[in-house]
Length: 394
Image (cartoon, rainbow, N blue to C red; front, side):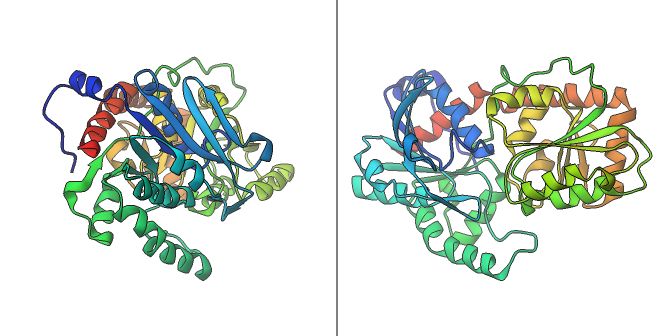
């Protein structure tokens, strides 16, 4: 689906040198999920050659306004409420209509901020690149009828409005591009695969020795679609053969109060397994948290191409993940990571390998790091994005 332009990358950078780029992403700076980290990592890199802005939200009135950080101009609009823990209720249309941007780089179709960016794009006759980071289609897990109806309604109204009025639609997931084309009757000439990105200078292998226990890390939103409920059940299973490891959980969301209460009830865990709930953490802490871990566990029901998987692979931390989204295209079982089904036995087998098979883990982490350096480094993704910008601007 990805179509390249003729001419060298260097020439493209020259043509695009003076672009004013505006990234629209709802939570940068306060909730550093995967798409937010993507935006921040790419924006800092782009600011060396472009005038880069981020339009985002804040739940704090005293943080509303404009500031500059690491060469990036950040505009924050007030969002007093977040609907279903994912969609900040904000009114940023006035700020967006005042923007002199050449291109709106809109991250996801799911947000009110994205819908307003498309409206501003139409009003001001700008160009828009819609960049998807997951959330396409109906959730493949049980949700309430209210949420299901709301998702369908949103996708077919405001979401469709955003998709249909974007010059080009990119995604970090090839499978999501296929679904978008089918669900919204989008011409495939408008679709581009732009891979997820990781800063390999920030996320890199370090010595994680000296831990008193092996540590399995869950890092992400604490929501049902992430499979956090399944993970807890697996950890509580009383048939573990290896003792003395901890499950460390980093993130925020609707499961956090339950997990904190569970942490206090030590009788819920057996065989020397312990639960360590850190809650939300600033993204600057994530490299160190990864390097203190022996494996990342991602038991999701629904993903595109998760940033945390790339960060773990870049950090030399083996990944145990379910076979969702584009993860099977990135992780090859026992070569670049561990792929599991939704069963305790599959999960336990991978954990046992990490705890007991140092040679296998060494090979996996070496292969994974090389893959990330080759396919997902900042320089490569910036080059691909620049080519897509050139297409949007024509």
